[in-house]
Image (cartoon, rainbow over all chains, first blue to last red):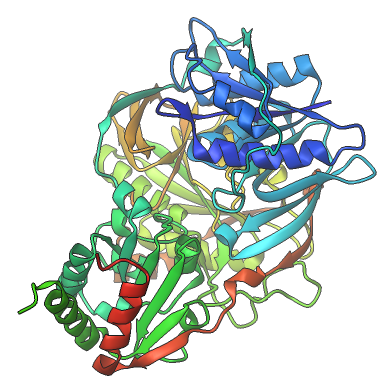
Length: 330
Length: 256
């Protein structure tokens, strides 16, 4: 038996999210009594980046190639995975819980009639051949222990719950097997074309410092000092859902379950109560500092440090202090 | 253009999630309910499309009798009709059974759906399954794309749907009829008007009772992750805390 893992590309190499998915897939394969192998599945002719998969325990990759399959086409990718799973007699198909991964798994579940467990943090086979798993609900604010009984387990991996771990042993080499899928015309009705890069909040997702503003900011005109502080610290402004719902700031600045997920060194959350919806987006922040007038706000139980006070007084004073420190001495 | 929008009633959890004693559901005794965020945007998008192209919006949900409240909220935003697929207490509705019931309702006895466009949220806020819209598309034999943040439809039924992926924009072009799942941010939903609210209050809600069937994925226990709990160290009050804040920023290495 084997576990198939979808490898998405990011630039020249495998996407970080796929390396995390591989780590979960390896854990699943290793839990089988008989021992299972993890096979990578990549799409397209490009072989650059596949060799590095050896570091994550992959020795064979099936490269899906078809003349009519140029670029991303969700249903066609799912059809190819279904065909490959049949050919190799797979016990599971694992994919990163990205837009592409979730979408392809949903198509695969729909076309095979099988259940899909999205947002998995951990998965293993129990003694009775059932797949046991822990998956995220509410974008990770709640966890579900579940059992999956299916001839083929379809698992999406939560984006922030599994670290990508290389194998301890010295990596071997990766053999690439071309795979030609059988596609129906309907599988190609929806396919992506890519446009130029745009500034889409990506800087927020990767910012080292995020200064956050919530309802406590009070209105669209109140964000100046927060932006100034973010600028001084080389960081980005993030906001809570109420701020975008009120139209104070654009949605691309929203941090949360339905916005951007951030993982900065420091998240300075100002006037933010700490709703579940918001905290799901900043759970990966290394340090959270809350500035809030209410010592009972839920964010106080999630922050590492807190200042009890009005952000409209604290932030300008902090901006002034940071500025004066930056000025040359004497 | 006839549009069906499928929404889900979810608990308004606020700052804390509490699990019931049996460990199988979220305790909602102290919470209200709302429509999952992506789906409120789906309703707004549908209303805008019918304002531009004519036609009407039908809003549908699968849930308990009380989910009629959420349907009325969506009627107040501008949907014309509402359908409740009523579930009984204790029945476990997974994504496969839910999609089958929605597809049945969309066809309403005919061979194909009576809608040009079916809109869903990208994923429900509570279960985060990411799949009901896609499953409905497969049952109905329609093209489908998910996670859309920008949607345009020509009078002739040509769809252009856009989303961002890894810093680039992905563009999908296909024809109606189709299924599209959207994300919050595609629009800013309007506030319901007073006439809208009054109309919603009086509106008749169509009801059906679909059959549930068990699925291969079963939840056994829900729990709140431990790592999420900590207690903040108070750095100080008001501007008196600024020196401690600056020292902390320095310690974290974000001042240089």
